[in-house]
Image (cartoon, helix red, strand yellow):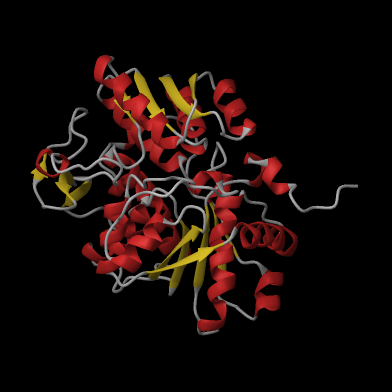
Length: 382
């Protein structure tokens, strides 16, 4: 297969190179404190083999991927929850079982393979925790230097992970948005590849593999609904991109209804869907740190896909998120962090409006051990 970049806004095509991150024309329209303009997506030409695997639909050859087992995460069929909720078609896609405990490994794996293919030794990334620890872990397997910009408020477990993997961690006195700005400024003056979520087109492309796996694990079928917790909008963009690829290749005949679930304290995408565009940012404040962003980097990409495919949004409170985290763990044995539990909270909020025979996939993006402090809120200690 052959691959190139295409601007998600104006449609201009670009060659895939390490220097190319955004569309020149649309990036020039960037406004302060708004989502990134001119995000690029990967476009493929040709056909994969008949027995294709997700790696066959990525723009880097298999031999460049580091020897770390990313992907192929289980699709749980939670017997107790199915009975309690009267939803026999409920599935849990558990990406917390990736090597560093989060779905972000899918993007880091592709970025690492791309860096190795082009002889790049250093990768820099800003993160609230998961993307950074992910790049640090995958980078360790790939033999890459990883420089991480991490807000001071990041959970200690994610900081410890990154340091254990050997990352060069720069703590930032501010939010993710300040960390992102410092990372971009560093790359203006030093050699290295940006792994920043959304900014690097490969982050969306890597995350699309979760949609390809869902399709395969359902017996080459599209679910009726996919619930996705969202902060910067890149994971949900990847989910849409994966199902779009399946449609383009003729493997699927329809899109699922994708539900974008956001926390009340970080709901920029939901507000944009309601009002038609992004307005001034609001300071984020939620227990779900992995989806806590003021300005969603992938916001315009996510908004365009939600509009194009008639997706929907649901906003849940922190109490709902923590309650869903506990109910999911106690009802299925699947322990996830608050950002992942938000997707299950969204399903619980919507389930009465869904047909009981629907096949529903709740995408669980991170392991519960990522943030023990949040998990212990409201629990009775022995």
